[in-house]
Length: 352
Image 1 (cartoon, rainbow, N blue to C red):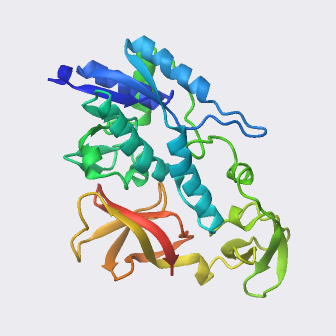
Image 2 (cartoon, helix red, strand yellow; image 1 turned 45 degrees about the vertical axis):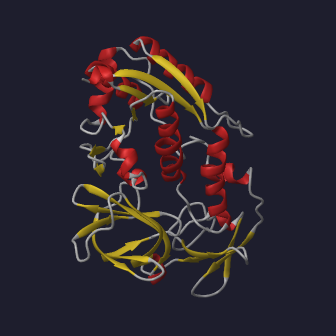
């Protein structure tokens, strides 16, 4: 019976995790809420709202009649997520800290801490489905978060519940409203998982020393502008270049050693388009897919699912897409699917 199962729910102070806790309590689980304190540092001009989020989670816990614990993961988060992100940007990559947060914090550190603290299972407010340690897309495709979950292990999935997997965002809001939950009207958080609305450039500039350099037209080799730091720019970027007049420019590359950013005004430039993606740090949830299997790949959250094939070499896994995509970016992830099942994926090191 569910009554014998103790579930620790990651409660962020948002509506999704609030409804997750409510649904599990209604189902008969013994529910304990956990607020993960991952980041609390204010930045110049920006205020970290962790205290307000914690208080919102506490209000919901009181409404539901459940205990709320606080797990302080700041040291581990700084090392395994923030430093990972900063190191990636220093190398000229565009890393995804949300994916690393799920891998290292929510479904490793939180899971192990909760189990040692008396939990039988954990639960989160992710929009995803899991069955027998396998991961599947959520019913609400617009909210599906399997792209961010592809690095979670099968063992962790076997010990996790995703109550929102079959619901739409509208249904979740309605449940929260009907229950009178304190977070029913709270807006969804935006931006990077731990810094919210802080522009990424503002955050990076607090930790990485940058200097201005040249923006160069790759076809003419002429300097067409000046940037404030090459690490701020990503492949395919159009806005924020500060180059006026004529056709818009797009970033197609950068040289971190020279501190140069390369652009083109030709949207059909081959440097902008890729069909073959070389991956590293590949992770498969339930073993590598069978050779020759018809698969789908996604190169960004909410990106189109494209037919693809996989090739394993001695040094890398290569995903070849059925057609070229724009702005496949080193440091970002390619996530592979078999219809609606998320199989895993890897991090782009080279796109051609």
